[in-house]
Image (cartoon, rainbow, N blue to C red; front, side):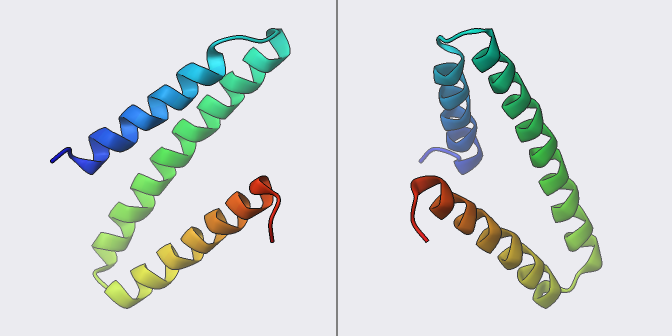
Length: 83
């Protein structure tokens, strides 16, 4: 079975590659901004995870991570046009 981290990285790379596949300079700039923001977000998520592990309080960790997951779900719904 494939490691979930490898799968996520592979899918992420494919999506960014598809985004970079064409378009004008403005869309390439947007892709670069998205890529940078994505890298920063991933680093921040990793730092948050390490800080939550260090706290050693699973209830607090789950609450915080659940709030972030809910934010992402809301963003996905908005992008898809639903509420």
